[in-house]
Length: 406
Image 1 (cartoon, helix red, strand yellow):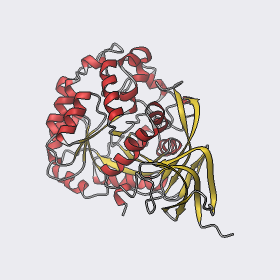
Image 2 (spheres, one colour):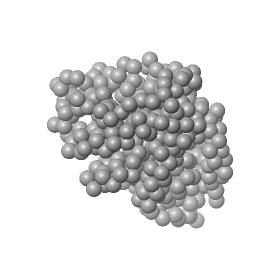
Image 3 (spheres, helix red, strand yellow):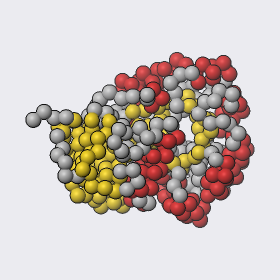
Image 4 (tube, helix red, strand yellow):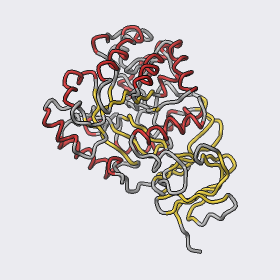
């Protein structure tokens, strides 16, 4: 019999905000939704009572490294980690070596991802010192500009471009380092986050990343601004930094447990975007003294199962798929399971396990999550109707730049 599609699924799917038993077919790169009793005339048909089909995750904050930092991570290792973690697309940050902040390097980065990535992707540019260069880069197929604290003085050039601007909200005036694990919540003053929001709140298309404070959430919601938080700022605290040292050192720092608890409660009641801020380093770098070791946690391999396990599948779908797709103007093509949507989805298996960092696809096979209990694992990841990850096996196929989506 002639097969009509590459991949199909019979089982439980999150179909437009409700769980239903259905048959899902990839009709080319589009979804076809049929009754559960219908046949599955596909090359591969996945079915099981312990499987759940959800929209593919989109991570808008990832440090892929590569180039002169390939010893930390490469395009291949990061995007394989993403696939294994049920992520269909990632957005790459520009703090590479050399930094992506020129026309030439932006186009080089896009070319490298197009050739080597396992997932769909998007690129951020850094902020160049030349205002004319800002205008030229803004016309390229990038997602937007990343503003680090070091860029604050020259970020005004972005205000007139109508470009998407993603801000690291830590006003340097209020930031000092501490050599003592567990103390950085105090020395990197939480008010630095509130102050940075005030500095950038009037930018036309501004997004605040890795927000750590419940007060920031309240403020940003009143302003109508978009924002995200990381799994580690939702699940870990300064106590983890005190115990695990460099493995839990990040910027902005992990907050006191009381702040984390309030942030977690706010997220549980009304979720917002989750983004990993996946920031891999070499193990020898993380073994340096606490003062010298670089900040960053790598979690692409497990971020989706983490959020689904520690909150719920519905929280994971909303925060890691639907809301990112809406932010990027890609909903309802992405971020939802419905007839005619893009056939980019993730299949999770409900099974108990613990995080084994040694099995990560990321080069950073360590971190503060090792040994964490999970309720779900990623069984398969499908991008545009094509099976890319299937229970431990990877398939390398053509990828797309998100700003080029039609």
